[in-house]
Length: 58
Image 1 (tube, rainbow, N blue to C red):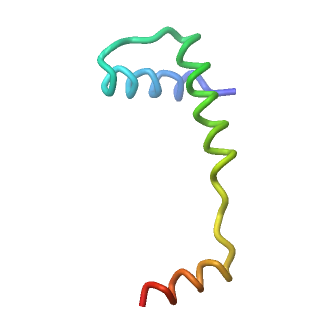
Image 2: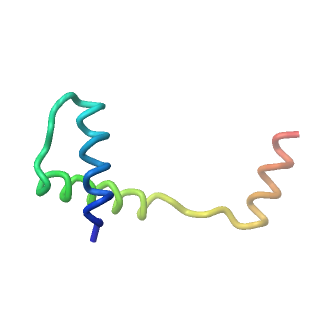
């Protein structure tokens, strides 16, 4: 569950980016979907992957 504080921050960012206000219900739905998407695609690097990344950058 998204806290009321973060819900309000999400609504502020949404208004700034899209120029319109959204309801708490819409903000909760969209915020929840955004968090779920991040959970699905974010995968921390292992130490081995990080080391390989560092070597490629040299």
